Length: 278
Ligand code: HEC
Ligand code: HEC
Image (cartoon, rainbow, N blue to C red; front, side):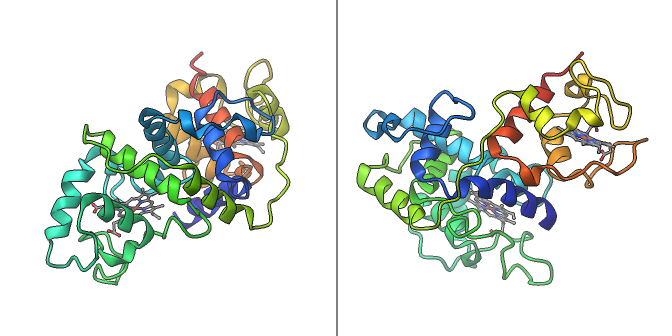
């Protein structure tokens, strides 16, 4: 898992230098692949709660890397399949709870930025007797969510189970601040992303080893029907960590190409492959 994290973080780090403005655009506007975001397009005043919740969801599964641990594999509480608001209220009643949150919103925020304050029983670091959390502070490097992104996730976690959203929509002030704090880091030149799945397959040489679209190769599994064999998440993991699960009957030679991918390219490939059901 350390490995997956590392890889994913390296993939994500391409986008870390880009300001919040870009995050909002990437998540909210119809994506124009390969084109540099234009600042004028952001209009925080037109941001409504539904869109903010949607930003929270995409941050949860994307940049936040939350689903890497928070899934149904037992590594961390399965936040998507539990009522986080109700559970948070219970956690705060636990005698082991020593945090400072007095309401659910603050508990969820605290869980994200100070995970060590309260460690859910059974989920602590090995050998720590639940005194240390394996979860990273998601506001710190390398995940580095902005205050607005943290709020968006809280909004999403509340809304997904029908609870009222208690965080406020970001104001320009708050957004400017987080953008400024990101902007003070050296911003790497944005690499040019492949614009189509075909371009991404070519850019990363996938067709050299896989039968896909019109080309054939016997080296790796046929990808023309991969969507009917693997789930989206399995496809994503096959690319992010090729050695974690090696397809039966094939040599473990798939290179780790995720290192060189942008998030948009990775997600575009995952989307494309999930649709290959020939
Ligand atoms: C490296 C694995 C990992 C990542 C990445 C991760 N978490 Fe966690 N998280 C955990 C573990 C393990 C726990 C349980 C131990 C604890 O309470 O600290 C936890 C606990 C929590 C809790 C408290 C749950 C409860 O039942 O009280 C919340 C809320 C939470 N995480 C949210 C998030 C969000 C949101 C993200 C992404 C921005 C995230 N986590 C990323 C591993 C992770
Ligand atoms: C050097 C050869 C090679 C290259 C290049 C390569 N792969 Fe693979 N790939 C393999 C092999 C061999 C396997 C089967 C072994 C394994 O699972 O690691 C595999 C497995 C997979 C799987 C899992 C398929 C299944 O049925 O389980 C997916 C998805 C995948 N590759 C996608 C890609 C994508 C997307 C690219 C380009 C970004 C790519 N591969 C580049 C050799 C390669």
